[in-house]
Length: 347
Ligand code: ASP
Image (cartoon, rainbow, N blue to C red; front, side, top):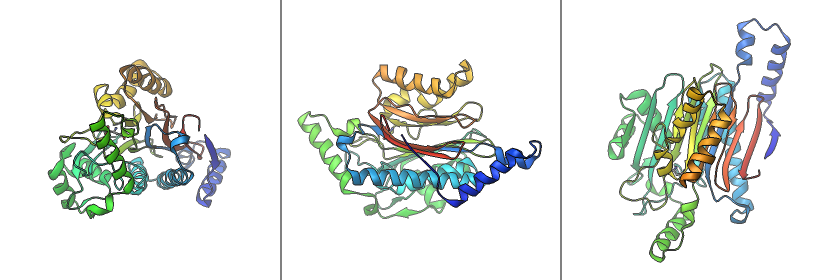
């Protein structure tokens, strides 16, 4: 994994302030709040992410987007904003990056249309919101994560779907873009490959490549939050909904155990209630985050044949990012302010 110190002067100043407080007396509330750990971890999907299938240009774009998303989220945390604000800021950048399967650049369904899914959960309150199967036909949500958050904050429900979710998002004044804005040559090509593979029985590249995005963060108040946004799986049919908008499967957050965002073959993540299972192992079995996450991804899911991975964080800011695929776009800024970005199995 590549590591480099954070460059922006703001973070440097913050580090100096923190160092100063550590030398000072420990019993003031200012010192305590300055020392409260903050951290953020993000993913841009798991799958057959190998050097052979990557171009230097694409890799540079992806690394830049992951870095920008982490820095945007971390800046919110550093200025005392909530983990919900931080993950929303990070996911906005990933949704706007066409290389990822979310927002702009989301994959096409069987009919060649984009349908977004997204969810968010607040670890402090247990509140959650989600949208599923929201088409971009006649205009789509620029940031599906905002719609999930609006469902959580401004509706009595947890999940809204299809046309109803769109009507609700409009009533909330959320940003919409014309359908054309969402489509890229890349996803069209993948869709064509998937359609051809279907008629020729060849294996489709897209059955092994997921690029959903997600973020998990811990704020100065000690609150965890998790969010996930996706276009689902290429060539999906009949209104298929994956794990990403399902609380407990693709997203989960609880201040008492952990927060998780998943990526991979959604049907397996739903059946194995992956995000919740990781947190439940911590809560009920007293397991450490890394062990709980590793067991679910590299034992339970792997044995079942489910490909994918998760990002996860515990209330102390410890981070786990297990995956059982060749690679996963991922990165974090840890409680020391150190940024790490990785793509492949080894870095
Ligand atoms: N988990 C997503 C789904 O099944 C796909 C992905 O992670 O890219 O819809």
